[in-house]
Amino acid sequence: MILGGGVGGLVSANKISKILNGKAEITVIDKNPYHEFMASYPWVALGYKEPDDIRRPLSLLSKKNVNFINDEIVEIQPSKNKVITKNSEYEYDFCIVSLGAEVKEDEIPNFSEEAHHSWSLEGSLRLREAIKNFKGGNIVIGIAGAYYRCPPAPYEIAGQVDFFLRIRGVRNKSEITVFHITPGPMSNMGPAISSVISEILSNKGIKFVGNFEPVRIDKENKKVISKDGRELNYDLLIMTPPHKPNSVVAKSELSSPKGLPIVDPSTFRSKNFPNVFIIGDVVNPAINLPPAGVVAHFQAEFVSTQIAAEIKGTYVGDSFSPVAMCIMDFGDDALFPMCEFSKMYLDLSGPPSCGVLARGKEVKLIKMLFEFMWFANYLSK
Ligand SMILES: Cc1cc2nc3c(=O)[nH]c(=O)nc-3n(C[C@H](O)[C@H](O)[C@H](O)COP(=O)(O)OP(=O)(O)OC[C@H]3O[C@@H](n4cnc5c(N)ncnc54)[C@H](O)[C@@H]3O)c2cc1C
Image 1 (cartoon, protein in one colour):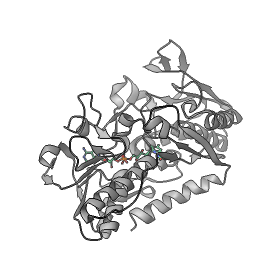
Image 2 (image 1 turned 30 degrees about the vertical axis):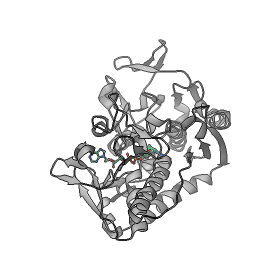
Image 3 (image 1 turned 120 degrees about the horizontal axis):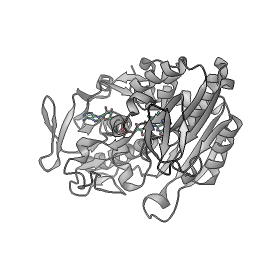
Image 4 (image 1 turned 45 degrees about the horizontal axis):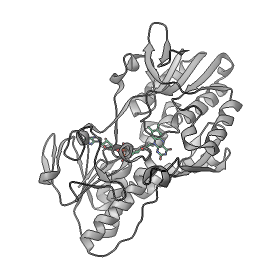
């Protein structure tokens, strides 16, 4: 039983089906009938892609001998090996939970009226209208809190918005400012990445404001206000919405009273329910890994081979390496950074080791090809 048909769920379903080849009944449950490729949301926001270009029906999983149930999970009962949905209930032998993060716009007053974002498909389409109608002024881009999907995305969006406005001829009538709680752009990942992002932002005339923890959006005066009293005036506000780990997992027996899943960080196996594995954005804040698709992907491959090995009774190898790479599209420039998280994740001895694998316009092509390969591999028509 695989809960969630996002990155972790989709990769797990494909991997287990391939290894066990008919020796297991595999079911994915998701409330969304589609798998959405979230890394392409900014391209939807800028009008380069339409929603149907970046999503596929999860029912296509039947081609991989995987059942898909389109229903909302309301409760997980690991002590009974049971999952309760709005319309039914299901039992399992093994369960992979990859229910992701939840966007909670209402956690910040005035957020939904004032802020735009591309952290959901609906949000991306709303942002598209706002950018299309933008005639010039201050664009402020930032984050609501430290936990949000894809840490590099706000910088990418700033670069893409800059490029888009230049094409439309309104960039010279606009100021773009990016704010973040870190002192420098992605400075928590070390100087190798941070210095290149700083250079790209500066080449584009984008201002960066660091150590800025937003506490309030002043709707009347169109300002974002930080904890230490600084203010940023905006005509267009683009901000990551507040995120929380999935609430069904948070309130289940799989999580601590604080709402974070309790797993063995080296196997992602639930400490109290060993036939349950929890991966992706829902668990990563609890084990010092970033909420990123690439991490969910590697975790999915790793836990799938653990389950397949138990069912087959033989070793099926795939180790987990705590690395993340991401192609950052800045419009007319792109970056391919990579980080290794061993120190930050298991032994808690220091920051990740990061470097930049490639930079240049052509790197963007890899991002475009990746989306194509993703659907061809995991959910082809
Ligand atoms: C703008 C943007 C850009 C990004 N760019 C990148 C990138 O370049 N590289 C990268 O590595 N990552 C990127 N990411 C992050 C990446 O998409 C996520 O980290 C990844 O999708 C997490 O996978 P997951 O399986 O944990 O959760 P998700 O992919 O979010 O899947 C969770 C699934 O669970 C379902 N679900 C949730 N609750 C329920 C319920 N109660 N009942 C039934 N179903 C439920 C949801 O519908 C969803 O399909 C980006 C994200 C965004 C928003």
